[in-house]
Figure 1 (cartoon, rainbow, N blue to C red):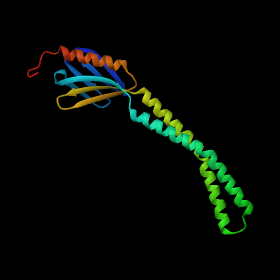
Figure 2: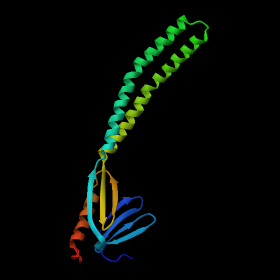
Figure 3: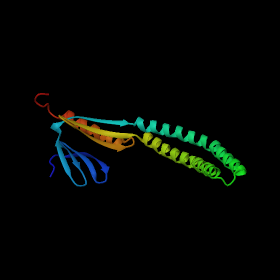
Figure 4: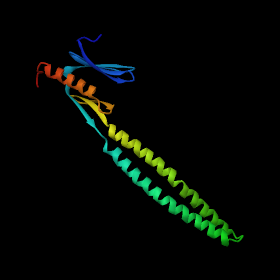
Length: 178
């Protein structure tokens, strides 16, 4: 039984939620429960952040996809011309057969560039979406550690919950040594 009046709570989904009581903060998980007295909490922080690494990867993949797409057509035409030129003058020698096979392999390799470029573009688009969505993170700081609670996207409800926790921290009587 948790003593103290329930002031507000935030649901993280998948059975996890944070509940703010007048004297403690309670984390209810799918398999566990943790209660922390507000007197042990040093500070609360909430921030919306975007990961610039996702943007960097997306731009890099898009540039590489453009290079593959640009190289695909010239490489295909060169391999086709090479294979047809060898076939015209080819005899039954093993070197001619090796050259025709190599030109055919180069043509098959060049044909893979376009689908690969499209796949890289799709991955880059997904990374751009995740970059744009960002993460809202609630950070609870204790004397020796921090607990972070990230939520995908801009989440005003998490901000409101953090404000309620901050108000309860401010309402606590001064602690000795503070």
